[in-house]
Image (cartoon, rainbow, N blue to C red):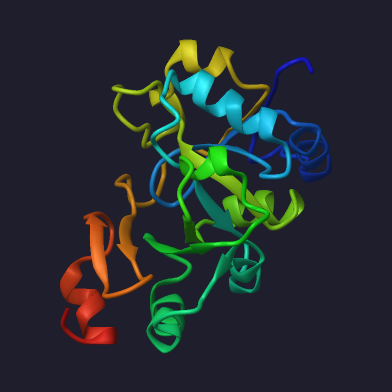
Length: 209
């Protein structure tokens, strides 16, 4: 499709959803940094994310969800269920990505051939509206060529990267401007990346680990 650029005044969610569901990529603002996303049902679209980023398939994408109810469409909350639900309650929407066991419908290419998937609900209404319009789940990662800084505002997106995406949403500046914290909750809690939520904040909710 011909590239379309939206700002918040002319954002057409119906047109966005139609384009994304057809397998096109979208760059959109979140609370942390700008993300590039695709629906998980189209493996070719997921491949396009890796190609746009010039990224190896060894780095998994995460699933951004518009609502907690969408988590179990892609993941099993089979371990630490009470703690996982507490984390969702206190930190979602927000900058905490939770690693869980993936369901069979999550393409292997999205999770680097692994058995887990990261899920997060962003604290950004435009992002939530876009994700919901596209079916409630978008495979997403930062909207940059690998090695470049993650863009905190639309003007920081590289011109080369923008050329590789069909749908662009200019949402100005991201609220936080730093990536999410990633915590693996499949067994004993383990922080894989420090970001917008501190370990101390997490321990206040689920206890020390």
